[in-house]
Image (tube, rainbow, N blue to C red; front, side, top):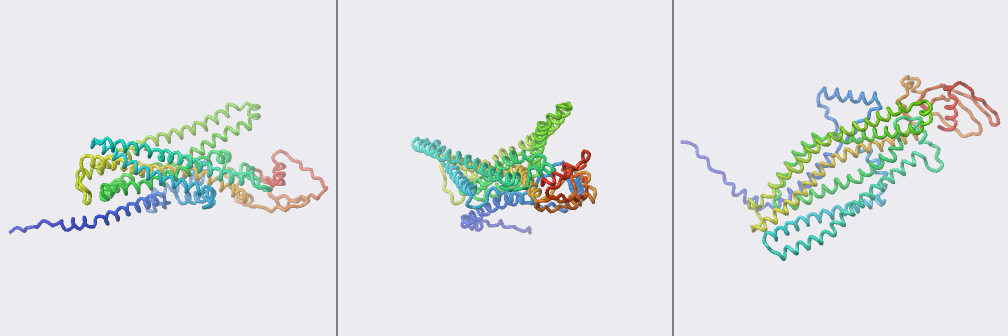
Length: 509
């Protein structure tokens, strides 16, 4: 006799699920909020390189480190790593010195406006559904009242959007002012300062070729990106949480879980195909600085160039630097083109089609705990859910775009942090001359790394002082002499023997 299998009775489980569905909805909504904030935090955290990637990747990384160490002229690769967060934290201490500072108050005001705008967006989405619902029901009075509400809500909405742009611009200006004041304090020194960093940075250290471009252009770009990145990340995260909470009340948190899994998988695909835009931004800024330095050098040495007829050579140098910049910008534009195509297809069209299917759930299926609706009610619910879902999809897309913005911010952070770090090193007499050929000799390297002591006195005395040119060439390893007040000393010698370098040392340069 063949065995008989009884059909499992799922009705008790379904009844238990319906009975506890409100609590399940709350747990799912809370889990979604934790996943949104935690996932964004984890995605932007510095991740150590995987040690088990294989020998080939290890060889590639070692080769890259060797090239970076052997060729300082090549731009370093900029990544969102621990070094980026360390540098950003140091710069944030400069731009926001305290919780009672003007910048902190502007941030609080900016945050309040972001919350207010999200609340207005949710109300507008519901109002949009009511307008369409009254239109489908052919109710002229409710339709006109909803249109009147639409016009009234436009007043705070437009005011909020304009104020957001205004406060963000004020934040960027405040950040730039703080950084510029700090940079000028280091670069030109305070009252009574004898550091002369503006001279030492160009003559005794060659890590920065164009401090003028860094102080003017790079600080401005960093400030603008820093002010925009807060709005580009905080607002979308808040929108995702609030929009999806409202959506879960309309279509159920179960549909939200399915949508979250789908979005998470597609977002992982986008992260894998996203290039390092931070490195591209840093390299473009460096190339623009080189071109600027070439033009300024041409203006400074115009007399010598005209005397020797070197305008053709200088033209070739300017064209070389310009076309290097254009070549890099064109390459980045091509990368952005194909990346933008893939990104828009996934975020706008793929997520949009999935969202339409989610919005249709209350139309085709009876949701537990939700009343039956007529044609106008279903239309109103669908339009409201679709509007909220489109806003949520746009917010999630901006979170995805924000990773690209953070990458570009990492590039400008590296440039500005390098400026401050180099000026602080120069202030502490820590120089680096990567172009010095004699520094490769161990004995010369020790001389270049050594620092003497200066004493204020009425007489002039050198005791075992090396004479070193601004290029780092050692002319005299140890020079000692003593000139008493009222005595005269004539210093003679051929070109390049160290006469000017001696007086640079006397002048504290």
